[in-house]
Picture 1 (tube, one colour):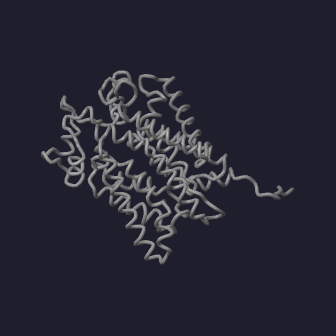
Picture 2 (cartoon, rainbow, N blue to C red):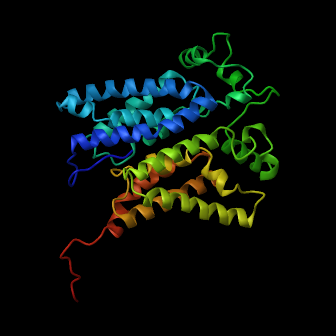
Picture 3 (tube, rainbow, N blue to C red):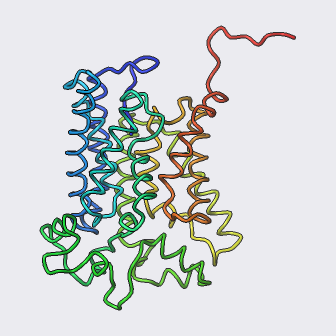
Amino acid sequence: MAFWIASSPHNHTQNQTSKLMRLVIYATIPGIFAQWYFFGWGNLIHIGLAVATALVAEFFVLSLREQPISKQLFDGSAILTAVLLGICLPALAPWWITVLGSLFAIAIVKQLYGGLGHNPFNPAMAAYVMLLVSFPVQMTSWQPPLSLMSVELDFLNTLTTILTGFTSEGYSVEQLRTHIDGYTMATPLDSLKNDIGQGLTVAESITKPVFGQHFSLGWEWVNAGFLLGGLFLLARKAIPLATPLSFLASILVCSFIAYSINPDGNASTMFHWLSGATMLGAFFILTDPVSGATSTKGRIVFGALAGFLVFIIRKFGGYPDAVAFAVLLCNMAAPLIDQYTRPRTYGHSVKQP
């Protein structure tokens, strides 16, 4: 989540903040459109629920803190946090997952630490991890692409499923995730990790329909959409280049080394780049200047560390996507990274012994 910091340490230029928040929200549209095209209405519904909940939570917390409500409520930061959270949630997750996540992101992660500019963790990712740890069943019930589903999902059916857990015809979420051949489908990252753990090679695993003809059916285009939005932000100089470039390069190096050593047990770089939340994390999450590193050198280290953690967690951890966990770990490391990479203050001199 990116925004404009006017002067140190945390004084914000309201017009610039709102303008930049809107710009980042607009940049998510290609990725959201790809989600809608391949996975249906679920994420759009969750984004709407998250935005409404985030605005209500922000209003009440600002009222309790006796802060200027209109100025902070409509600066776009709460809306952007909600949009990012809604993008990350499983399309058929129950409605209360979105509400709890949005409340946690705004009331706890953002406002409890003092509001915009003071939060040590990325609010959307902190909320996502909280939900994943607390409600693993609901947060891992990923919907397969529409082309692989045995039940057709329109807007009304999707909304009914999110609100009640069943479609209007009585199908449960688990039934919706069942392939026509009778097995429950997972995301490409989940499928590959499970198959390798069971002794299959990468070449044998990627023959499943969920991988499509290239790397990961649907997800590759979602990542391409967020890449397009990220390039737009770079062209408008809304985010620094160092962080996403270092992040993607780090994944490239790690995956290339692993693939070169054991191609049967490790996926290619393109699979890692175009699966899960890689491009969303690179351009929309890690570029948050509040919870990230501040100097150019620090951003390079920050992005490289995040890429390394994503690869390690995907390879050895229990949560295949890994972006949210990598972001939070890097958020904790950001002050230390800044301490050793921040440029010297003008006039500073090293004391002679």
